[in-house]
Amino acid sequence: MSIQQNLKKIKSLLPEHVTLVAVSKTKPVSDLMEAYNAGQRIFGENKIQEMVNKYENMPKDIEWHMIGHVQSNKVKYMASFVHLIHGVDNFKLLKEINKQAIKHGRVIDCLLQIKIATEDSKFGMTPDEASEVIKSDTFSELKNIKIVGLMGMATFTNDENQVKKEFDYLKSTFENLKLINTHNYQLNTISMGMSGDYQLAINCGSTMVRVGSSIFGARNYK
Ligand SMILES: *Cc1c(COP(=O)(O)O)cnc(C)c1O
Image (tube, rainbow, N blue to C red):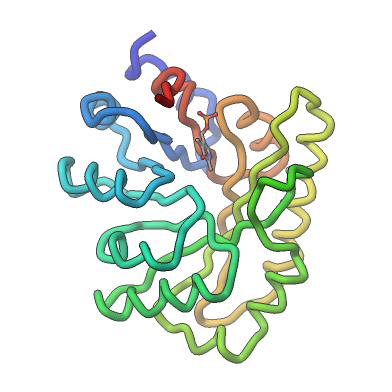
């Protein structure tokens, strides 16, 4: 099936309250343009330089989401245009995003990444660490960032019960952390679910799915 047909099929399966981020990492601009021409306006990338290159070569009404792990020293390259940063997992990074957002007179929306998987390789904060950051005085001084939700990546496994448990955990963490409310913190988004598990994620309360290979085909990492 073509990119256009894949997109149409996936969109028909998503409830209206669920946002589709088309994960286009490693794919050429021509593939992204095919999705764009089919109406897709939200794209997710996991490398900052690659996202910048695509941003420069594509229409300006696209919302660019950074879904990968972010190094503080690279925030400056995307601060002028990034729409949502999914993988924020430490306070130092939040401070840097705030600093770069000030330079561009923007408020940058962020999601806190919560570690829900059992694999050591996955990034993220514990719910307690997140809560500690949000309640700190220094956090309330960051006027150019806004935390709008949580993001999580489930363990890479065929065990659906395991994945469901992890999604349920993110959802309950969301409900708990949602009770905190400050000027730069208001949770409304749960980013969870990828090609293999987005339907399960939606059943568990996801409001934003990050789908790559089911739209663009398998990735070829050289
Ligand atoms: C690559 C990636 C995805 C998309 O994965 P698919 O299985 O191709 O849908 C989603 N989220 C993150 C953080 C990714 O890095």
